[in-house]
Image (tube, rainbow, N blue to C red; front, side):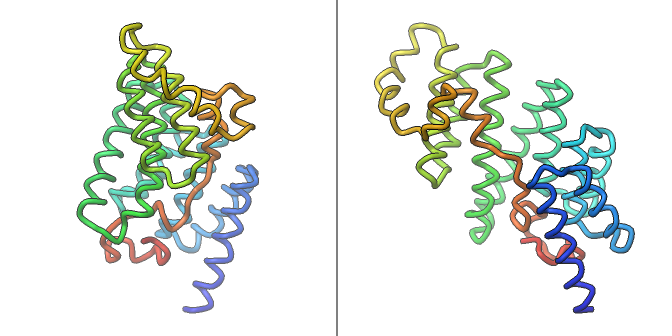
Length: 237
């Protein structure tokens, strides 16, 4: 049994490494190889869903998300993959609805389970940022500003926090004129605090694009509270 788990971990890390190197098709192949042996492995199925999303195989990716949720209904990573699919397919209203549901689930879970707060905060910050971007596109600028600010408050890194404030300032440009002075005073200070790479790209929407590389956050994304619900995913927390 120990040998099987060691092999599983090795394959999982290889698939994750391929994914983060953006070799998505190969990552999907490696994940599928393990799933033929361990079909109930939720963590590997998450890698597969993410890789399929990146290759544009959205129908297959949604099927994998559904399989994950059959075992782990509150799987944050699967929920985020669903959002990426919504975005790729241009389903803006659905994307916003899914993001709001993900945010409420994470907030509820963080309130109920103190030990999960730190790693759930990573997903919550990302979800708020994605929501801000979607709301900006939907023309809901005031809610977008609030979402980006919520993301900034959750971020622990100075650079990422600055990026989210910049995103909020970008969304401010779409507010009615009488609301804009509320944010005007902080614009200069915020832009000075941005990393140079994001400043050169203009902050705002471009800052969001460079601030959220597609990372899987394995062992942070998986089903939540009840280990018995995810006995086949030993590294789920």
